[in-house]
Image (cartoon, rainbow, N blue to C red; front, side):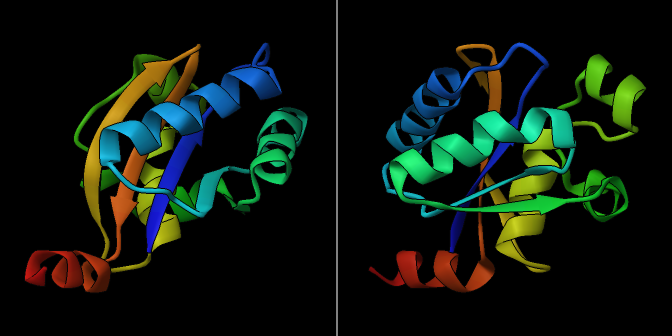
Length: 131
């Protein structure tokens, strides 16, 4: 399974999230049916609406769950560290959503003011390698 991790800010709009999803898929070369992010109530609406409009599942995780994957993040945002104690919300969310043995396929990038990252489950990575 491939998962797009998403990090938003208070001004993020659904259109921004949809553009970011498209960019993540363009860069990863494949459709990703699952989105993942940090559960933040006030910022969840744009992600939920983007998931509905694009036919995707969305998973929200609490700060502690994302924190367990912090050591697997390869980039660090000062804003994310000071607000959440997580190096990259997008990377940690993608990794958490893709499962315990997932790996980061695309590190954090910013598109339309939204941070994105893509993680893949080890099982899927092995199947893709066999092709």
